[in-house]
Amino acid sequence: MEPSNLLYSLCSINHKQKFIHFLLHSAVARSFLLLLSWLGVWFIGGLVEYAHHASVWFPPAGLTFAVLFVVGVRAIPILMLAAILVTMFTNNDYQIELQDIEVLEGGVLFGFAHIIPYYIGSKILYWLTQNKQLTLPLSIISFLLIAAISALVATALVLSALILSNMMSMNDFSATWLPFWIGDMAGIIVLSPLFFSFLHFVYPDKHFKILEHIEGQLLSASPQYKYKVLLSLSLVLVAMILAKFTQSMDSSFAIFFLVLPHMWIACSENAFFNILSLALTSLLVVFLVDVFELMNFVMVYQYAINVVAANALFAIAIPALTSYNTQLQNKVFVDSLTQTASREYLIQQARAELQKAQIENLPLCLLVYDIDHFKSINDMHGHDIGDYALKSLSHTVKQLLRPEDLLGRYGGDEFVVLLPKTDERVAMKIANRLLENINAIEYINDQQLSASIGITSIKQDDDFESLFKRADNALYEAKRSGRNCIFQH
Image (cartoon, rainbow, N blue to C red; front, side, top):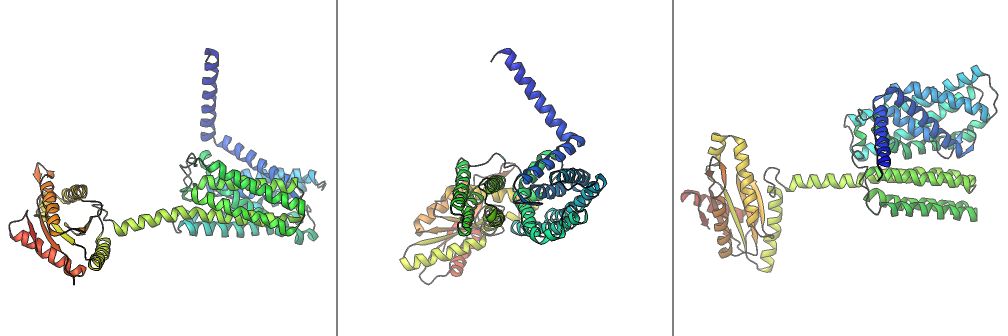
């Protein structure tokens, strides 16, 4: 690279870094960016307006909800200014010809009517998520319900404000309220989660727990993600071309097949890319409604956007629930200190192997051991050293066992090794190998562990309790014989 080009690149990077730093640390810059963003998404919604004050979706509702959730009451003056500005534009665009003072009053009325419901809804959601009152599925249900109710209240208040300010006639109310409500609800459900993630970048000092499944994942889309999105967009295009050429209400319902690729994306991608794909496909739906002149079916597409988004948001919970179930299973089946099998899991598996061995006439042995003088280790050196000894012991024993063997912590310092398809001769060899390696473990100041081991083999009429009792009795015989030895019953 030539020196002049290199210098230009370095200067460009430096300017970008300064701009980002300025944006993240300047309240004025962030307020100005918020105002421009709100006006920008308002105009986008206006491009697909199919009736006065009614759009296929209303992106400003989603941005307002997200901003009030993240920034709070400090954002209200900016949102109010945006409401006044768009009211002025609407007055000119619709040629309503109101006086300036009437436009200002109408803008203030619209601002309060638009902001108050979303402020209350966002604060309720904020309280629920910040106080960890809800699981992820219940958080999603709460978000959807709050979005629907907030949008409905906003619809009633905004339309009333438009009527009071003479920007809308009372006769238009009945024909406008339902598409207005569905459009606002779509704006919140589809776009608020996306706006949450962007606002987290602009307001990094704000921590909101609703994004715990989005933060830190912005660069982790799978290599197949672009093909999944392309499939979704292609399905939208095919479904809406079908509706265009057939002009049939029945054919317009093909758009609901969009649920399938979005469920696939939601179950296989992280939350951010799930909501990003929702925004892209719904934007294409909204755009094609206008391009293909499908206004006769617009309510179908509005409902489809909401239904697909709700399903995709619920599907976000599937990976989270899978992870939670795995963690819960580990808590139940794995001892947290030694990472060996828990007592419950050990007994469950032992009973299954015992029954199998009796039916198929297979050998099986049970080996029980504990650390000699373990109480003295705790008393003399503390429980931290005792825990270290248990973990070191378990790690060593696990390395020596076969894949089919199972090591579990039965309680305290007592451990059980289940040896399927193993006769007494082989079990004794395994026990000797374990004891030799246990004696080599140093837990503090060159002091080495010792252990006593009891062994027993299966009998035809055994259950787990009788098998364990014999092995446990053999363990105590080993202790009575001087410890650090093996006794076979």
